[in-house]
Image 1 (cartoon, rainbow, N blue to C red):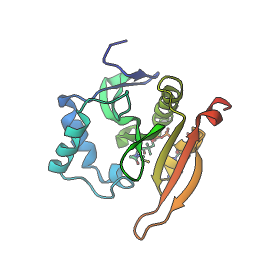
Image 2: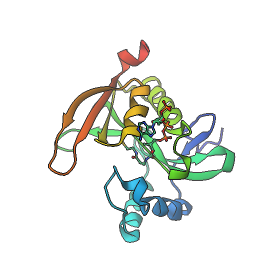
Image 3: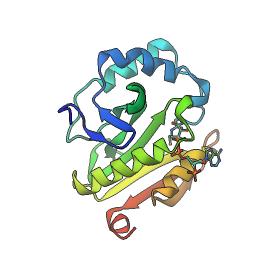
Length: 179
Ligand SMILES: CC(C)(COP(=O)(O)OP(=O)(O)OC[C@H]1O[C@@H](n2cnc3c(N)ncnc32)[C@H](O)[C@@H]1OP(=O)(O)O)[C@@H](O)C(=O)NCCC(=O)NCCS
């Protein structure tokens, strides 16, 4: 395995973002379907570039959103990972992480998010000493709900907002061990 590779599955490889991922990253952010439940509107190029710069910063404790490469085509198709779960004061909660997955539309419906999710849940619990993984899904994002429930996450609460509402899901290591 290449030393830069963080994790691998049958079809996917996860590695740190590189400057040459910029264009593919910005094209995803400009896609209204991709952004429907994660921001709600296409992200303008300048904003996407600023956000991309954040993803070039080195990760602490291997908790980050990683560039996601579709191995059969050696192509950047999005980002995925577990990253620090922050409390209301913005401090990382020890032993906890948040899961996220964002894939290009052409690759939806092939089980790739589930494949990535399984790998990161296992990685978090068994290699990074994480005890709880959480995720937030906008109400209406039914593919994401289906994927997260297939991974064993449980609905903890629903946060109802004026414009958008969110499901809060969590997966406990003890529950994962018994799956
Ligand atoms: C949500 C997302 C990650 C799903 O990726 P994916 O690779 O298509 O997911 P998978 O194929 O692993 O699993 C999706 C499941 O939802 C099902 N599904 C798809 N569309 C659905 C819908 N509209 N309603 C209900 N279920 C749906 C699929 O059939 C599949 O279930 P199955 O395996 O039982 O058939 C992908 O659409 C995406 O990246 N969207 C843009 C960013 C985003 O919203 N990220 C999630 C943030 S919480």
